[in-house]
Image 1 (spheres, chains in turn blue, orange, cyan):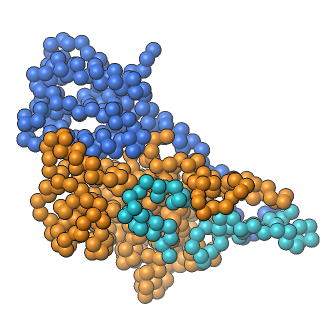
Image 2: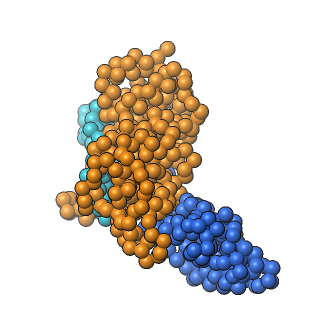
Image 3: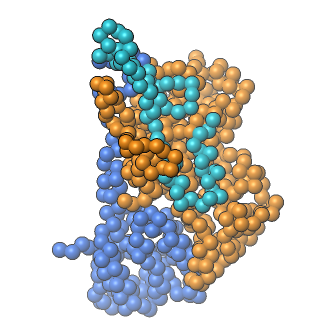
Length: 160
Length: 317
Length: 63
């Protein structure tokens, strides 16, 4: 029983979400591990969304937008690219494998490609293993509790 | 009716207490409006005095410093019980502050470095601090050193926050005035600071941002007037609350975010990451990576004061 | 063995407590000064860019 990665996918309305939709209407079978969130543009994806996804239990995060030059809002996908590249550098400093974050350009007509990316990324994250962020944080804090209640700071005065 | 207040410090440096003293002659006005029932830097009250108080006896507690060990947490819990209003004073209580950078390491890393590996320590017996020791038949205790630095709000309910490292003295004074006049805003608010980003208050000229490389602060001399970020120096102004009087900017130093994030921002450092990435010039991956190569130590720069309060809170073990 | 605690010590910067142990005659058997604080600057400054160090280590003490 191998682990099933939970992947959050931010898909832009005009290209990649439509591409994902096409994969569905074309009845293409692909891994069910991506939870899709439709945003109007990949440039809408605030890096806080990505970090929050990891903090809330995601094992992987996919950002998918229009091919460079094809952004419905002209340059939003370039902004997404810059944010993605900086996130890739900061994740390992947090101790998170940067391969858990992926950016892809997927056009509205690329249903097959969407399915292929999801299958590949799911396998990649499966091999990385569960992120278990909350569990690892609780584990690192499990001894961080108040001790010495009976010898709690008593101030001046007599003690036995 | 004079206010009854307590001023306490967790894992602190004393700078917030000095900021209160730096209200100078206004300290006399503070003494008129409040009686102080605990202030270790300045007055000889003991923990037993606080334990003897009835619950909610104090009107307000100003708690600076982060929660680094079990004593910090215990006194935070104690003061929360004994006070009507709990106020996080300064960046450490608010965000973890500079000591929050210890969240890049583990308890073991720190203990080993400080007591065993440090070049200036002479510890032949390889003694480490213990929670319980017996010396010559005498039992002694020390608090537990936590593995994760916590902010005040991660251990108790915090009613208000006065941000800054340190908070500007006049801001502390005006916040105390709000308490005295019973004019505090809704619970949970940040007081003694603005509600816009530092850029709004900053005296430097802001124009179009087209950054093609990042400079470390020693790599070139900034010009006198232009926005630091525009010149390629990382400045956390866009992700930081105003209210400090731009004291670093006026000293020709880019902001490092000590006043914390604006309202509704859950992670100041990642917000700064977003802001910086958004204003870089290139569109092509190779060129973008070339600029990012000039961004040195991003995590601890964006999260200089806020690592303990960030969404991921610490480096994953 | 009676134990008297002075906790916290005051009117200085930093945390400290003094534990005084009295023998049966009520005389002081021994007294210990303990410092219940540590933040670990020695460790977490490792790896910081050198030009940032002045702004970090000034937070060791605000007095």
